[in-house]
Length: 113
Image (cartoon, rainbow, N blue to C red; front, side, top):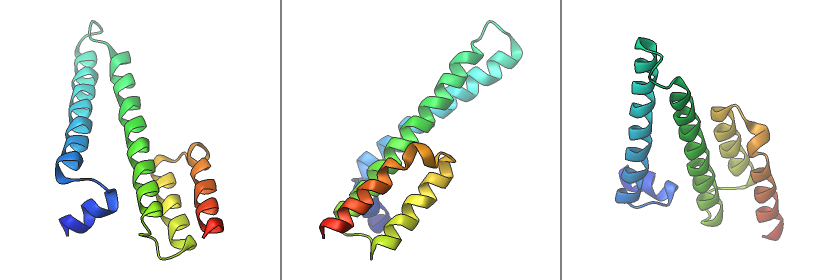
């Protein structure tokens, strides 16, 4: 199961772990800034918000990496499977307009085949 999971991400175990560790550290820092700001305004609530945003940005990058890897390596059965996966990722971020550019990559990939 782990091997298949890593294959769909296009990452080694070390890379996968490193990505997740980095996101975990950012999340913990964000949580501490949020908690600390609740205790005293001397601790930056703005920094917590910046870290929240950084986590989303890194998540989007990872998601687009995953989608590109699967598309380029033939891991989708067909165009509809690729579009379904894309739509699921876009829905997670509730930001389909920011990710719609990737739909063009899917269209181009399947038009070239």
